[in-house]
Image (cartoon, rainbow over all chains, first blue to last red; front, top):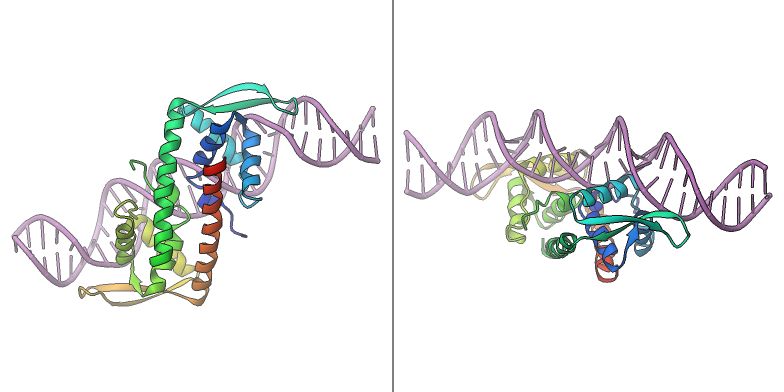
Length: 110
Length: 110
DNA sequence: ATATATATGTTGACTATCGACATGTGAGAT
DNA sequence: ATCTCACATGTCGATAGTCAACATATATAT
């Protein structure tokens, strides 16, 4: 696992963000920690990827933010999906399934 | 499927190439057609991605090429994996499985 | 003759990730 | 008191891989 996740993360980060904030409002730092936790430290999203991705998604109107307080009492920016963000998530999941299905097929039968 | 496959293809193209030439020697054009066929036209790899990827892999010593004739009688460059290319394929498949497992987990339980 | 599919290759633009840097706060240790 | 660490948001320049478009050439079918 020496290889950086740059290449594969490419294209799935927005899906992951949308999915993680669908369950509940989360702030950026929390999203990064969640990804790291789910992956048992295999996938580590740097701030230089995460925050631009959040701003990108917000700019596209797929997520919206609001300032609030974290469990630890700190000032944080919570994100939640907009309606079009929820729709986008469905599309991205469906495309991911199709895409990963193709990769698996070629791995099996290529 | 309006979305271009740029983002997701990123990081899996070398895996696909290595896998497809593991079964038998193939030339570039054939590899592209194979990916397109397996994916039923969902994944279309342009020449601007494919040929640089082949040269990259050859430069890294993961594949080797030899000129020959295609079934249609044309002069083509056949590629096959080197020993380290075969090893690299195993690693990439294993990493792909881990990676896609994480994405699927987050999609299910995020 | 001409168009199409086969076949290899290059180029410049784009874009998302990366590592490093910058800034600030709250909690616990010394 | 001070210091370090985890928390938390953000920017910046470099890197790298894909893309569309272009360039070239041959064999086959119309």
